Length: 100
Image: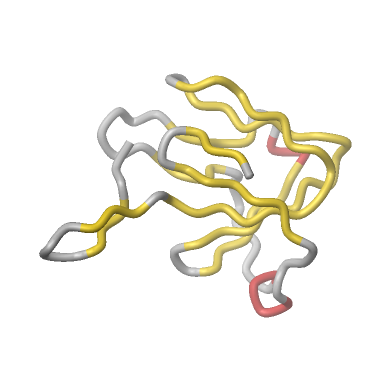
């Protein structure tokens, strides 16, 4: 498992078939609301991102793909499948997504 700021990435063995039906036209994992910086794949030709509501799946179809963000070190992901989600935090009012 990898963490880059408020984003978690976990290797998985498959992407659910219903999720594969929703490829995204970009490879931005999370757009930073506060800073405007994004957690994204450096070379969009190396991976495909799929939407699953509040979660995403990533298919790295090249030998590797690099997750980059202006305020964090890069993460190199090997060829394979990954689940991506944002960190959440609890407050008495609600469980909410952490904002980077």
